Image (cartoon, rainbow, N blue to C red; front, top):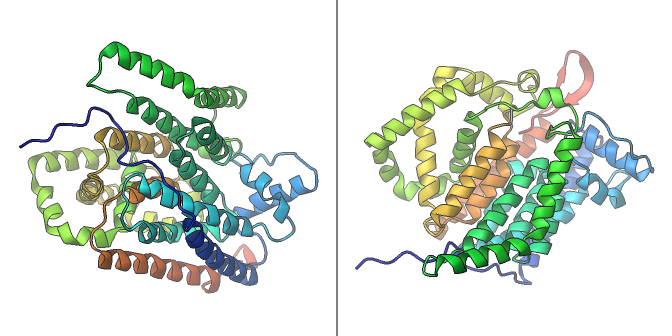
Length: 424
């Protein structure tokens, strides 16, 4: 017996928040306070991009609203963190995490109602997210507001979250658009007459007026900013057709979910020799070979792990291309891990990820945080023992990275006496 397709494109469940989710948020926030305090002990002064973020926040606290032309993203984090001026700015992320975890829980329940806390704990322990949040970076605020925006059904409230998301990182306008298109698509019912569907679409479009305003505001921003996405340092952030970024993201997601691959490992491997898979690998190999770029920041800064990944592996075009089976393997795993997600939403996810990642010139793994979190929270998990192993893996990797950051310091010859530290 065949099952008929549902007449509407909609999510499996409505978003549900529970008061107890804030207990998990409080736990993560408390741990984050401890980690941030440790960072303050060993790294009391602003480090790397913190020089720009913290100095801009303190300028605002002093009533000086001039803009540093080297800062590329809008000032939402600086404004929200003003009460913490004077050496406590990093704790802003500890507060944010208290609200991020319940957002993850609510978003998870929109797709899967099982293993909510365990899955959210895995996502909350993502090493690059934790590492970038114990210092004063924008990643956690960007992620938190995007996930809350997706999780709220009220268009006005959702648009307010996406507004803050865009005022944290401009490319979040793409995720806001995906939300609006998803809401519109959910009103189409193929079992109803076309005229009735048209009326429903028009009514829904009017209800999405906050997103129309958000889009209009973004277009005004582009016009006033000489049609550039970044606010400052535009020459160093000129867009490229960097297709390889998308495949790096796919590999990043699969690698962090390696335990979930194990039960179907042989099946995934056997499909690599299918004719369609081989053709796809050939196309990916050409794209990654041809459309992958280095960046002056990537080549000049040996404090980032991406410096070593690029120098030892990805800088070689042939080696990049020979990784095509891994990209195909990872893409298949990601798709099959979300059988509960409508193909239209999968398309929107891929489309949005391409729009956000492909123009980015710099190979930077922090760009993959939002796509990873959205995908991982929507996946159907395997048995709990593998989930526990995945959580242990995340915590172990972060512990290694955190220890390297704190204790494995080195100096540059041109900056004697200044401790340099390893980071994502």
